[in-house]
Length: 116
Image (cartoon, rainbow, N blue to C red; front, side, top):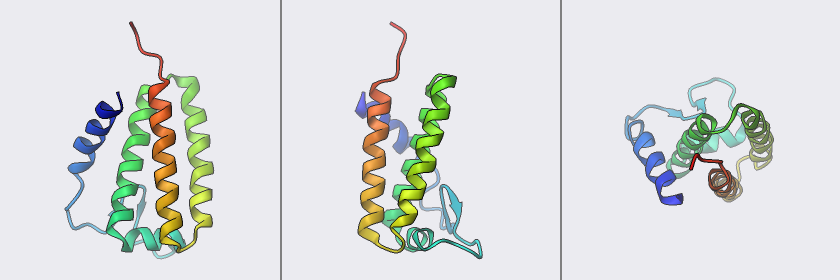
């Protein structure tokens, strides 16, 4: 199951990578007032790619979850964004935050009730 989620994420996010745009998946890198964590994400290709994967996964999970669970997912995402912002410009901290969030998404995906 983890492999199918990973393949879906790669297929969807591959369409936006390499376009040369100065956008991360979840915010505009050309915005005038970026937070320190956002500036680092925009300037670091690996973090920018992690943001694309995280946002793509979040959107996929939102579509798979039942209505009642979507609010919980959104609340968790809001809390996670605050935690990422606490990293400021610390690349290792931001990377660890993305890694942790993706593990949480994998657990959420494993626990989705599927029809028999």
